[in-house]
Image 1 (cartoon, rainbow, N blue to C red):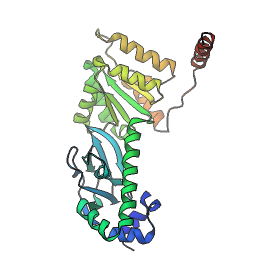
Image 2 (tube, rainbow, N blue to C red):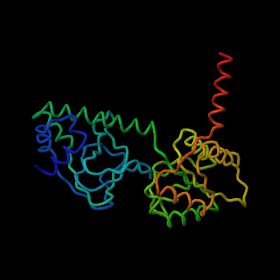
Image 3 (cartoon, rainbow, N blue to C red):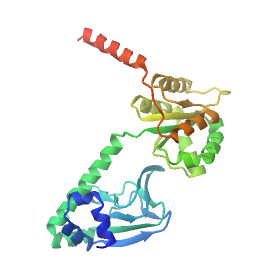
Image 4 (cartoon, rainbow, N blue to C red):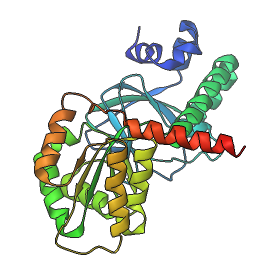
Length: 289
């Protein structure tokens, strides 16, 4: 059995195709390789092929934000089967990658030779595209937020360089300018990026805290300067207190938070006041129903 057939049988596609059908599909696919850091797919270009990774890993990156890391048996390029048929992200080799491609011409030939196999593949990739799109909308990720005032951005960059090994294993979200600076200065890939603080970024992080998507906040604040969005900064700290989210405001406390995260997710304690307040509000609405 060929390595390509092995990879396809180890992928979710095996739920749609029999072993014989997988072998038929494999004869229409071409094997390619990419060196580390090679760009395999470019965002915004026509989606002319779908591919499965046979060995190695690749990052899916959109607007400097890492959306996923793909390994053996994972597909990319399923937007070929969307109505737009346009790439929605870059795919870049994280290490040496071997992958097999089914392009539009290959698919048309497969359709003529094995229509049932082609239609089952089409159904699978359409479902995969829809699932990935819904995941981006219904985000369940537990992020570590990285924020810094302008005077403290160099301090955060130095901190990120020193603790890059720990940070790059975590899903990171950052406010606009801070996120861009971190990526350019350290190479760290963000899982998500929001607006700059004064433009609503602090509020966006606060919204993620309230929705349960933040496991810790690292916010290097400048205590010696006034800030036009001071109210947003205070609100962010208040939300961390409400939801018992660790809130590190300097390198020493940030180091302690990272040390805890190295041993797994930070243990979050339920705030009894939140449940009490929610119950009171529920009773209030019942009274006026």
